[in-house]
Length: 91
Image 1 (cartoon, rainbow, N blue to C red):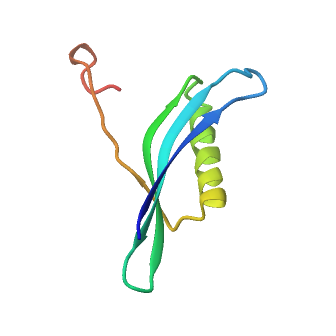
Image 2 (cartoon, rainbow, N blue to C red; image 1 turned 180 degrees about the horizontal axis):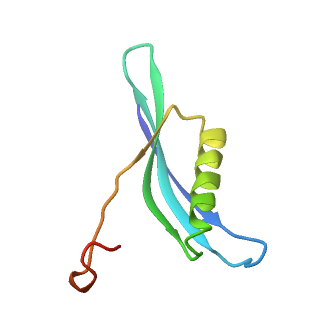
């Protein structure tokens, strides 16, 4: 039996107690065979109101939390990139 379990992870810092980031993901428990069960996390949204230097730390903390608390074997992320014409090639 499979299940779909949505989650929102809110990121706050000591400097800014209001929301600084958001991650939306779901935990998908899939039955691979009759006896094997694999838990997969699908990341759907990742955003932060922090500077570029702090962003990798934000992502690392979020992934560490997911690995520790969701007990998953796989984390999947679909990446979509949109570039504006006047900033050709830049995010």
